[in-house]
Amino acid sequence: MGRNVITAPHQIAKQTYLQIKSTGIVEEVKALSQTEDDISKIVLHLASCVLFASVLTLWEGIDCTYLKPLSATIRNYPETSVVNSNNNNEIPGIIQLMSQSTRGMGRGAIDRSDGWYQDTYATSLDSGQEYARIIPSYNEIMLEHRAVRVPAWKKEVSTKDDVIHSVDTVIRALETINELKSIAPEYEWETMKEILQGPLLTLDLQYSCSVLQQARDFLSSDVRQEIGFDWGSCAWRRCGAQADAQESLAELYNSIGLFEPFECLFTIDIVERSLRDILTVIPEDYKPNSNEIIERIGSYTAYEPRNAEGENEDGVENIDKDFLDALVKLRSVNFDVED
Image (cartoon, rainbow, N blue to C red; front, top):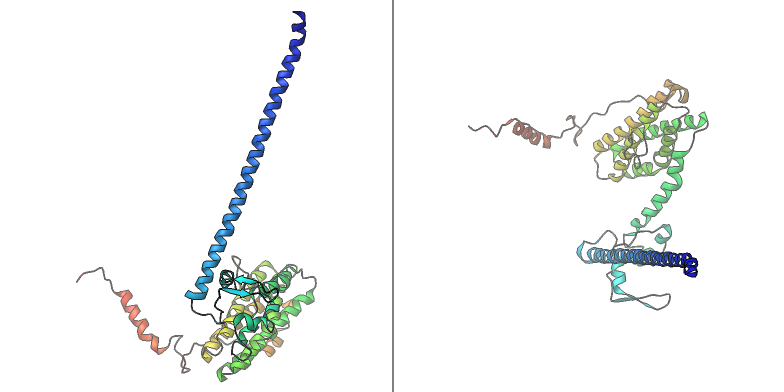
């Protein structure tokens, strides 16, 4: 009897230990099962994403190859199989078909080199398609954006000379704008295109405006807000004079040969007003005196809208006047009132 009393606590402890151990094993099994379940869900999700992307890419390849009209660069129609020249292995035609929807994406300057370009777009140097070869890819444009534009925006202006030099660039750009105004009526499209492609109205002007926009130690917040951000990156921020000038220069460049001279002058006037707005808000300490500025760029003369015949029509051509008059009359008629 006494022995049972003595050993009873040990038995209770042993039973408790076994219960705790069994409970721990059950929890470990549950945790392991949950982990396996999570892994299977992740694998299933990734497999579903890959399958969906493959089906979407295949459909886009079919759409780009057979349904849409041919693009500016001729595509090769996929074959049943393609022989890889490196190891003589055959690539399934379905893979080539899928590549039609992504052709040209992720490309760089090296992919516009001799050989690759002609083979990819089934063209030759004398086929008239060579001009498209100089167009940079999306990757090249974004590389320039990351390597040039963004560092320029983040650059801290440390000297007064940086601001003065940037202001002088704006003045030189206005001198070039005056040159464009003088040759536009003469249909000098090639000369205008060369000027618009030059560094002064592109990289130099863009960099200088970015420097002025970041000149917190020298220019007030109102002045920098008037200058604004780059046209392609102002987004939800204020697109000021810089963006207006860049957008108008791009429109003029893209429409050279399509615009009539009076349309070119209208677009050039937007650029001129934008750059002059920048000069107006810059404090006198950072720009030449008024007489020197007038001597270099002259006084501003407001553009008078004219039609193709050179007649002042208040921005409306004769062919449109009757249509606009009819619209005015229609707006004045109350169709709800019955006679």
